[in-house]
Figure 1 (cartoon, rainbow, N blue to C red):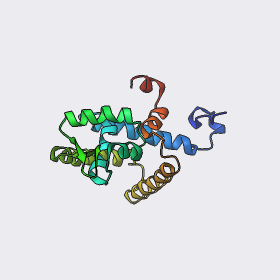
Figure 2: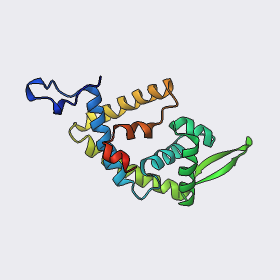
Figure 3: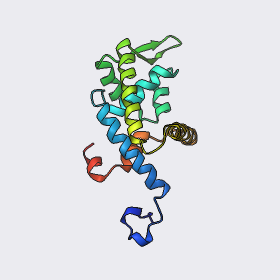
Figure 4: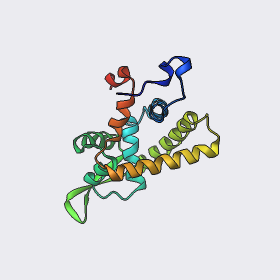
Length: 175
């Protein structure tokens, strides 16, 4: 049995938002604003996350990238193809294992990521605008810690599928 949305309850029964409702509201609003800010980047926030990992982390292969982000390998291949076609990344043979491909950001990709990070930061500040600036940092830090712990416990979880699952039905069917 699911917990009813607090806003749909009669006023005398409202006890405030549940944790899940709160997370869903933040995530939906984040997704709306970030996707708008990243509409020129192939695959929007998914492309952004891939590019960010490629630039900021040592992920040696395409398979490791799929595992790090919790994205199905076949889906990742299509996104990487589009990022590569846009000149943002390139596949290179791994010098340690010629059967494997490393995903490397191009200079254009690094520049695109820097601009995308500015847009995402603005979107996040807007989404978290109801919190004082110091609390925004605390919220981001705690959310990151919780997400890393969840990912460590269930590395196969696809974060994009998680986002989609909390979108309103009309927005889900448009994807």
